Image (spheres, helix red, strand yellow):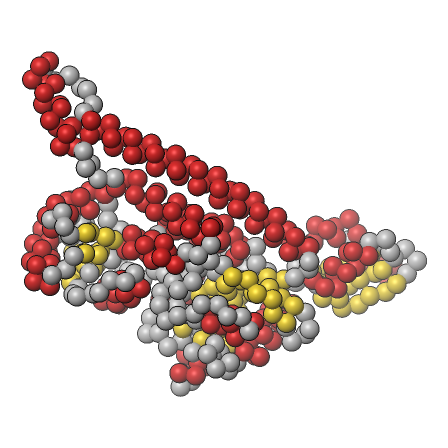
Length: 429
């Protein structure tokens, strides 16, 4: 494993901690880590990413440690990868963090949608990295043409094969995108139907391996795969949970986040991540025992901002609190704003308090509303009672006068029956 740190930049994690995370990723992918090295440098080498001296040092380590794979902690350009493979030898595989994460995703994707998303991300990553495996033929053909006619610009068979490969991958990418759009449309229809059932949605987010799946298991009594490895689960899982007030709420577990999350992943998993964008509330699960908990929180917040959902109300669950001396002190150290609840997804400690905090946060997120609903709109009356908070209700000649609070996305349904302040004053008189 190879880590690099630019002297003028401040990374989210120190290079040593980032390499430790890379080692866990490698182990998750089924690789055995036999060594690591790092370099602090002023700038990236355009050819080999790291300096030529470090490249030679790694080449010697490969032979000494009998390594077959070299993994860089940062994304390599296609040129970086080609140059390094030429130096290390064709038997040595050169990967970067992005390729490793994509490989793990390929191992763990279970549903058709998940597999399509992973394949799309892999193909888009590979297109600029197609190795010119036919260029020796192109050079030979070019030489013959040049000898005969003096440098005529004809493509050799190598160039033709490369373009054929690119066209084939391009067609496959287009096909997958169409399939994913169909999945997205189906998901949207399912989401609209789910909204009509008047169930609120809480999206569980967090750094990979923070304990999201274990927490959902504890909340719902489900049996979702939860393992001590990065990206143990990929496909979104939704479960119904009864809240303390008696209402049922849907909890959706989403793919875990990680620092340096590849853009290909965010783009390919758009349909899955839309579950977060359409949630009523976010439940951010934090591994309170992790030495880089603060940096992991920052990585999750950065990704939420990228998805434009950082404005949603949020409750933070400080997981694994049974292994922490003073969870309240830790919450203060982490400078977490808003509602924070220490929990243990393993033992169940703090689960009741977490549900109360989530219910309170959902009520606080509602908008004050005053409507006069005609009796024929019984559907809207039911919707207000089940999805909103009714503070006062009066039955009159013209209909039902309701004071209360509603989620923002339901306000348009009630707009035609909204009572203005002026009308309210007149009615009061």
